[in-house]
Image (cartoon, rainbow, N blue to C red; front, side, top):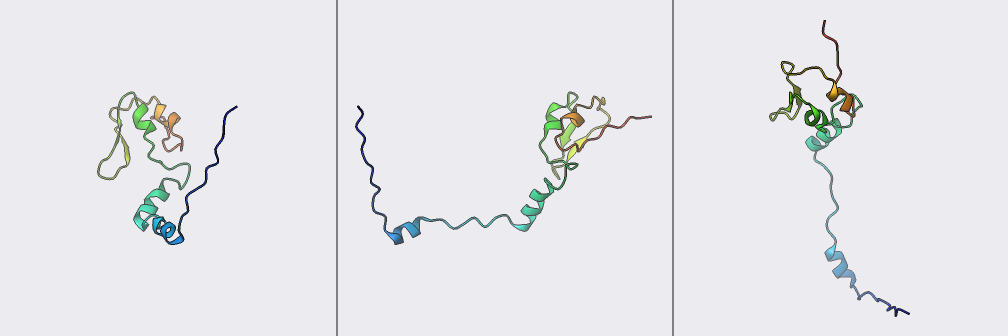
Length: 98
C-alpha cells in the first residue's frame, strides 16, 4: 500500500499576491487589428497560409516582400491547378485561356 501525503499550500499574503499579478493584455493597436481582421473577412480572401506557394511544382508563386501579398508569375505557371485546389479559402480561381 502506497502512503499518501497531504499537501498544504504555503500562506500567501494578500499584498504579495497582488504584486505578483501582471497587467491584463490590452489587445492589438488599430493597424494590427485591421491587418489581422483582413485575414478572416470571407472565404474568398487569401489568409496568407502559403499553401499555394509551398505546393506549386513550378515555383511560380511568391510572396512580395514589400507588401506581403502572394503573386503568381503567369509566364512560368503551367496551369496545373494545384494552388486553386489546395487553397482553403478558394482565393485562387482557374480560368481557361482562349
